[in-house]
Image (cartoon, rainbow, N blue to C red; front, side, top):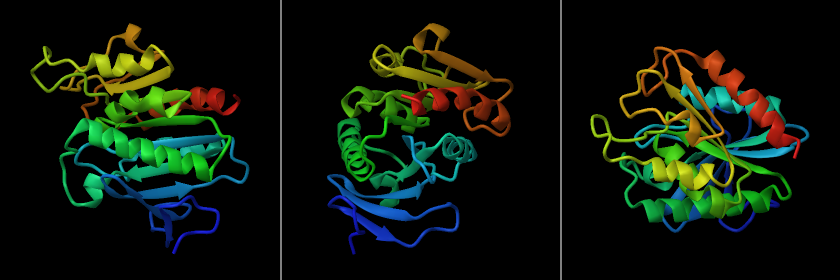
Length: 223
């Protein structure tokens, strides 16, 4: 059943155990996506977050950002992309992934009109958020563990994906000090924060992540 006030393709289902709000299923050109929605009483911002290539939206860093987003008055949508809903670990074609992401953005903007958009994610999700930022009309991007290159292959840089967003919108990058996927340079984004001692998947430093995103979310939410 389509929820009242929802755009076409957004179907309501029961809230999961892990979120404050409800969940929706959205049909895209790449298959269905699952979206965990958390809504504050007076929304000022729309914050879309997504996972790494083989991960999920319950990653602790994403949950920290969700909590900080809600405190800043953001509607927070944690997006499980179609390939993960289908049980795959590899995202497949970047153009197809990006097209599906932009469909998700469009549907959520229809559902929550007039709110500034910030999008982000961890690892592969950060790449998607950067690649689509301009087309999505995002005010900012949060890139958690941006994978600058495959481990041990710095010549295969993905810096152009980061710069495609950072030259047009505010981008905040948060990477672990020991990330084998590399760390962007300070000049490559509005802010690059390094979490001491952490690998690609954060095991600690969540207070630092929260403190880093707080002022940015407050800034975007005031626009």
